[in-house]
Structures are given as structure tokens and as C-alpha cells.
Image 1: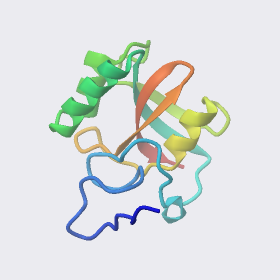
Image 2: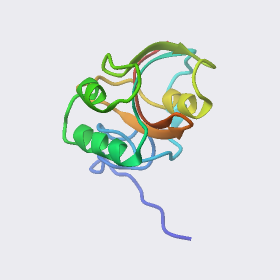
Image 3: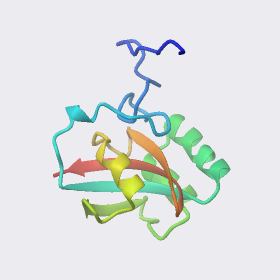
Image 4: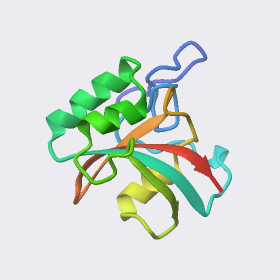
Length: 133
């Protein structure tokens, strides 16, 4: 069994889990979702890419500091071209894998997004949440 990597106060950029760091989490690890209050709806944005390579290009732009909505306009391949905005979505209204990932994210802004990645039948998504209620 490999030793686990522990996060410290100095290590805020990568970490394990979706909600850690200011520029997003790594892949689909389980996050400490217990810190978030239960929500019945989220205000979500996403970037949908059919190809893994295009998703990776979008991630590079986000990690380089580009705003989430600008990256969504440039890279997203769906009709949510308004900066990737999906609006307020209640539980059960989204793809199960997408919803699980999105509800585990902390709210953030497009200028400093906390994002996560998930693959669904529609393609590769990069998700951020702007609000919870």
C-alpha cells in the first residue's frame, strides 16, 4: 500500500479532492463534503468537451488564471455558451455522475474558480458551482 499524501497549509494548490485549492481539484477523488451544508439546488457552470485533449487544454487555461466563463465560451461544445452557465438546478435534474461531483463542490467565482472534472455519457465536464441553496 502506497503512503498517502497529506495536505498542509502550505499545500493548497493541488491536494486530494474536489474542493481543495483555489484552482480546482484533481479528477474524481472523494472530497470532504461534510464541510458543506446540505443543498437542494446549485447554481452551476460547466465546460463540456467531447475529447479528452480539448478538456486538458481548457484545464491549462483555467490553471493559468483565465476566467471560467471565458474558457467556457472558448472550449465548451454544448449550447450553454453563456459562459457555461446552467443556472439553478435541483437534485435529480442532472446526470447522476455530474450531480454527485457538482454537489460536493464549494461555491466560487468565475475569476477564482474551484472546479472538478467528471466524465459522463455526454463527454468530459469541468464543473464549478457559483451558489447553493
